[in-house]
Length: 294
Image (cartoon, rainbow, N blue to C red; front, side):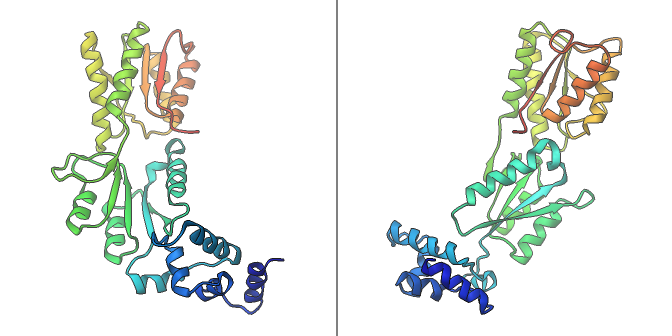
């Protein structure tokens, strides 16, 4: 058995946790050097940092976060405020996995803070800022005049949004091009001869709902067709609700021949609804959706 593993077992038997000094003794380095290596200090050789991290992993070293916070004023935590709507279409799982992978090999770890359905969206953000519970925030479901973003800008708190706002003050964001998605989806349906195209949009309060509507309308305008926006349902409606909605559309007097739905799960619900009404997908109706799961 190698030396680090023996030391780890001895500490465990004694009811003690490994410390920076434990790593320093095993590596033959000073405590300060070990500390800098674990912080990815640029002044140290890559080989030294890798050796220190390997020893730390073997002995199960974990920094005492309360102590780190007292000493540095940093938590090494990134918080993701998880909107309840993020259950939709495997979105939350993929988001968490992507962020976790990006943080892998760094000192930071991810904290997921759920936002309850009946909770004011600004409450979890205010809690993190006022308690300094994290060093940075990731927000989803941005709105045109997002109060969360306004507060974070006023407090000068590090954050990024998945989605855009329409605020005058620039802020960090990443986003997909929802205008382009619906524009191209509508064009594809028109190219297949579809003329009665219905779109299921995200809830109106979210910025990307307007972007999707804009791309859809632009393509229809260029083709001289009339917009048909789904009423009474949206992209966050349960799949079984959209199943019933599609069934009602199919049995109506002016059934659509094309559907745009930006979620796989919700699109599957609509496919079932059309099939139950006797429609053949790809013949009687085409459905375009955005890939939202693995």
